[in-house]
Length: 138
Image (cartoon, rainbow, N blue to C red; front, side, top):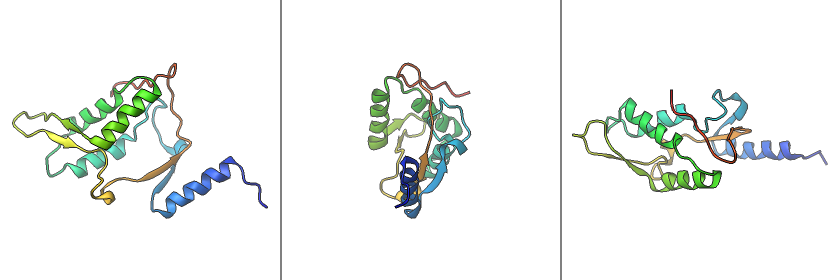
């Protein structure tokens, strides 16, 4: 029997995701600050595509990202807050107050092919004292 270790198990799970047509990315291949937990390029692409007909603006997309970056607390508290946003969505106040506010859904549950699916492993993040600290956008 071949030597089956944690790495082999992890990679076999990544293969299962690839079989389901997820894009596989090793965490060390994602260029970002180690405090950055969002895949911002993917999130921006999703938001622009999903809300193109609503005319979402670059500053509104940046506002969504900044809101997500500013979630703080213990890892448990931050994960709970993000999970609620993922499941329930939220209202985005428009930059142009004459336009109707947008109901933002971070996952398109109705049309899954509109989402960007990635399986990422070995994605290291830095936190301080069990607090998720994410710097403001620059």
